[in-house]
Image (cartoon, rainbow, N blue to C red; front, side, top):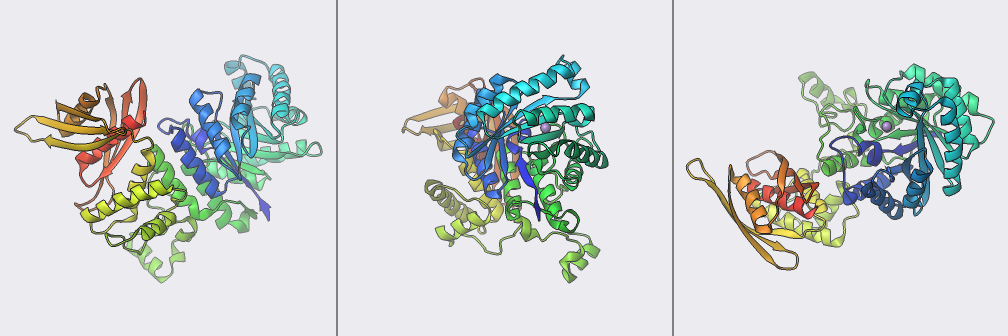
Length: 499
Ligand code: MN
């Protein structure tokens, strides 16, 4: 059966969308998940974009094995040099060189001409091929380009050493039948020369990213660009889970497979939400909270008779499994480890598991039953607290509507130094945050604060996410505790630790 290759751009196109930025440790953690998912290519970033991006691409290229690692670069030699330096440590490095090919982009954005662009493509793709054995050439806004000219550009890229040619529907404009036709046209025009792979990069501006991606596959595309949860610029990219599960569920139609381990689709989706703090819409296909929920009487009745009446995918096939094992204070370390693995948290170090087990025991004391969601929240707090320079020792908060809100706090640094602070505030959390600033002599400012309960019930844990600005940087923090003041304090300290 024909295999379609999965090029994952969660860490590049996805990460550059507003609200989805990740730091190095977060990106590496997501890259490990993508490796476990078994995608064919991880686009790790845009190395020439910033020093931070460069460091992320380089680290992922050096750490991740068994999968090709790509960096995006503009069609200029200096970008190729930087990207190559970042990815050269990868097992299979891939340079993804792009330039726009539509008249609109060429004249208005590049202030250039078709002839100039063609020359640039020849020169830079040839340059990139001398650096890296695998070069992808991406035509930005390909779907609004003159198709004869696009074919000419692709031929030029191919002649100069590109091995993958990418048709980018940069603004989500094309319709499925049109893309099918374009892919057929390009394949026919390019065949007979050097061997190549044809790929597509579809955006969701008209809600057609997955449909277009599947249409391209039907027309013979060898590789497709996707992202976990469909994140990406504006309305996002074609989603990995929708594309992979459509191919799997309707193999009778497409006759294609992918190498993706579908049982990790839900864990990968959850991990991305955990790392970015951005939730998936409830009715999102495959990974939304409601994608496998049934409430109406007729549906539930059908489900009880035979779940195939209202479900076309076996939830277990995408890793959506509810634990029947009750975790509580009598559960041992081994039980926790097994639960962690089942939830997709593989690759945690011994120290991290030790720390998690301690937190799990404390939580099990406060709460009779520890759910999967509780465990996920603990892992998130643990994974995100990388440096742990400062930690909470003790605090007192006074709050009410007849007195001013105050907080006394004692914070301990990793070298043992203690810092004490006191402050008042508009409310108890404001007072606590002012007290932390007072103790540490910082001028951190709270930009965003979000609290939600991890599970239902009055003994539920509160999960607090904060965004603060400190030392001219914006950093995220996360804290979880049955006491929401403590969760709030930990989130703020976590953000300071992540600066
Ligand atoms: Mn894009």
